[in-house]
Length: 125
Image (cartoon, rainbow, N blue to C red; front, side, top):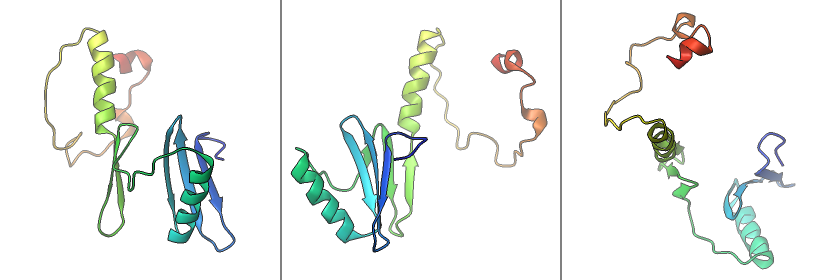
């Protein structure tokens, strides 16, 4: 178990394969470096708990998960971010203004120490 993220677990097996698991209440996301290890895990956990195996994950806790043909994985939390922004801005009385930006900052922007707020009061402005 991770000492930092209490819902993250992993196990390394004698053959060098690894299984990693993220558990939040009744939502479980897991992967392995070995198909045999993955199948053994699914069989063992299926015997112990009443569960439904749903195949490859596309969404987990409002996070979109995409896997490219080269096995690169992309995690996108834009849906979650939008829900948080809406929740708190609407409570603060801010009106909803729809804007679309291709990038969060101009592509030629280089951050420096001068771009940081001097204190909490300046950051709130």
